[in-house]
Image 1: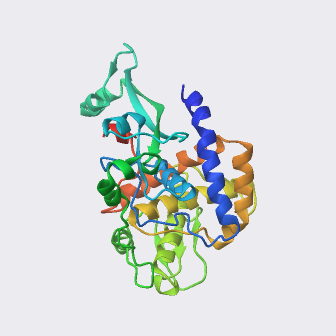
Image 2: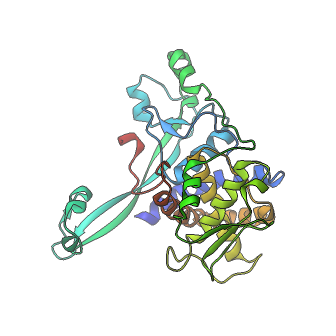
Length: 328
């Protein structure tokens, strides 16, 4: 069932990411998320979407020129007295639903009941993740502007843009650095290279003062933190590879999208690293060749972001067991 759903929605997600990467090939210094003045993707009730849906809906809003990343299902539009404009295409929002089944009796219980069980009793159950999705429409694909002009103006109003210049501070990351609470040591040293060493399980990054903008410092640090989640003792994602080969390029895309996703959650835009500009074409080729390639990437991005979320204070949770935003 999961594979059928993946095969159904993967082409739409892949087509979107291809279009986004194509906007970067001419100018790799363009941010992954170009406009953050309308907030994070959410439904009409203000419930935020989660995990990879955050990136996908922000990419979609930019490419389609939507005024704000507010979405709704067809049913919710009808409940609000709104019409979907003729010819509008819905976009899939995916989530994982966890089924809990007893290993011997095969009896199913609700996940909330499972998590209330003692640890010893939980061992008698299997957790079965099943992917689901539902189609959503953007606010601009409805007639709200004509039917509810005041509400439309309120929902599309821009927030005060954040200061991305020198002096930008990120409290959660600064506290993590101060307390050295990440899963491996992070050393800020005067230099011109940032990297993660799998053999030493250590991150080296230039000092914040060396970066022209605070966002560039935090972006670089998030990128290396994302790499470190792949250590064999954590997510076991890293493979023996060298600069330029397919595994290396894949890991760079995981780190890029993880940094982009978590940068958004923390309130600043991230740009592709200069040395990764050469990979943009390769990423396009892989996405065009195998649409499900993106789902494997997003799975790793979600896992890495969840690990980061668990270590950063005051950061919005980005992943976990997905629940439909429409039902939240």
